[in-house]
Image (cartoon, rainbow, N blue to C red; front, side, top):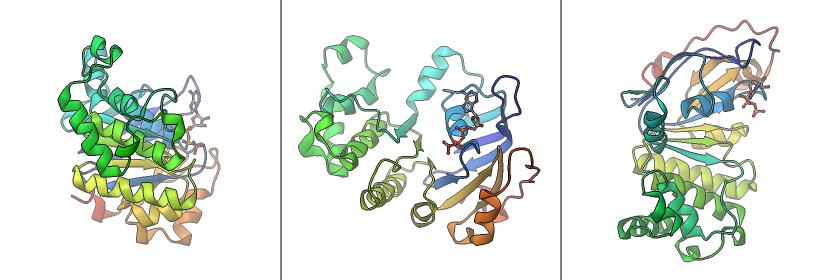
Length: 264
Ligand SMILES: Nc1ncnc2c1ncn2[C@@H]1O[C@H](COP(=O)(O)OP(=O)(O)OP(=O)(O)O)[C@@H](O)[C@H]1O
């Protein structure tokens, strides 16, 4: 369970770009975050793994408060947060297996990672996961020999190698063609179920958000102004989410009661 309370992020001395956000996400729930460019979607994701330092508020992942962790604590917590990126973030000249094993960095002693002496158990797990997502036959290929969809599958397996407690996906399908995008969204949804993982996806494609996620959170200039099941994302809701300007933003957040404790 991820529980965010009163989260504020201000860059420098400007207006906050996250304004007192509250959000709870239960296990196995796939949540899309949608909203205009600049609404604060990436900032929210980055606050969770503290690539961006929250200004105030609380982020608790399965009982661990993330906002106050020291450097060592943060290293440990980041292992529990799997990330999937728009640009895949693979090392092109390394093999699929080497990329996948980099998900174990921070768990393995550095010498093992440098020497590429992966423990047997990690190799076994990597093959199992690669098999699961359909890329096992590419294990020894260089990452840059793969298609976009295959590369994103490598990114997903790398995240799963961390044995994460949550998956954060920052526009995971934005670089992919429509059919491949759908396959990746379907995969994320299936994996959420299989691994009992909450999955939080920052996404621009509202059709995919509606089709493949359990819940949609609509942000407008730092506030959550929509939080409901995909069926509720009608034209009027879309207009509210994608309208306005930062200066005109005065919206109140009224959560859908059916998601009071996020689909748990
Ligand atoms: N490092 C930064 N320093 C200063 N301002 C920033 C920084 N990162 C983001 N911002 C600002 O914060 C606001 C929210 O940006 P953010 O990237 O979180 O929005 P977004 O909803 O993810 O947008 P997009 O859909 O375009 O990725 C924007 O006004 C942006 O300019």
